[in-house]
Amino acid sequence: MRIGALGRGERPDAVFAVNDIMAMGLMDALRQAGLDVPGDMSVVGFDDIGPSARAIYNLTIVAQPVSVMLRRGLDLLAGRIADPGLPYETAVPRG
Image (cartoon, rainbow, N blue to C red; front, side, top):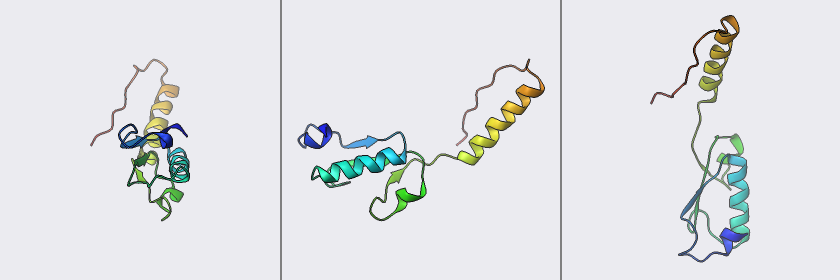
């Protein structure tokens, strides 16, 4: 693993993975390379799946409001089916 082989001053302080499965795999690989997670490098996941909360991982995550996103996407789809001439819309989370 290339990141695991880098010296302390060369490797990143943290890695943001595109999902929790990849983050957990990265954590496993870093540990196999002899690094402490999060002592030597932090890892952040991105979907808040159940196994990421297990004590062996205790993964820091960016939670996505999946049910809200799904509901909004279905509303947009139903509107487009009902009226194909609707203008395009961009959905932006409120926060």
